[in-house]
Length: 402
Image (cartoon, rainbow, N blue to C red):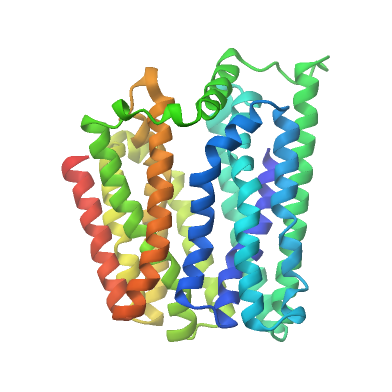
């Protein structure tokens, strides 16, 4: 589990961090950059429930491994792509690749969440998740900086080809450790070796609940669950995620085309963001106990409204935006799921969490398409200011009505 996440950090700090930057540099429009986020959200909406049904009929560990292979094989395409096709054709390939890899990628996410509940005992889940998140942050930071250094040293597009090759290595090694994890699970379920403890009853129960949720399909989206206080929470979270994802697709085109940031500076600002997320998360449990999930969620959303506002002001302010945004994201990322859980009935969580998944992906899809369209009409600077204000309103609404 730890090495899987460590190698995923290599992928995250290289290919994932720079594919949108590369697409922008070869001429991708705002709308095309938005599709890089919108297409996975659309696939999630269409395939998450069928993926759960498909997974329920197969050995979970093996299914997780093979869906990771099918999803991550597409990263291989990026390595030779810059020298094979003209820029416009490359952009179309990247978009088509994003669409196709999201189908097995959806099953991978669904399956791994269930597998995590099966193989990690209840009393160890917080520790394991914490170490995995720390590894992801630290290794992503390191490889973002390494990738920026490579892009600064090598000619375009050779530097991007090397960065994409590093991502392929990370993706392959992460999948290898998912395979080893499935083999360890088989040992636990079978003979045992005296070293690994059997899965706990709680772990089996969590995994069974997760798989049952998706196996039941659309029956889980019960209308009676979406009412009262929970419906209000979902409306507030939709507003927040909509404002969030209206901003995200226009940041990269803005900093590349308007601020003219080099790849090294982009790597540095990404690292600043992830570093502040890491350090901001260290004391999160104590802060949460003092202020509660709702208040921290609202404060985080209102604070991260400064990110697009500061970004619109220029290069120096963009550095400050990443530091402040990282601190805010350490709050939001750390409390969102617990905030949702404390507003769902313990005896009916699957149906309520299904609604949140639907709300989240609908907001990502809508925001990723609407944000670039609005920016194309009113301009980057005005759009960033508008979306920052929308984020603040969403945070204030959570504080008042959440």
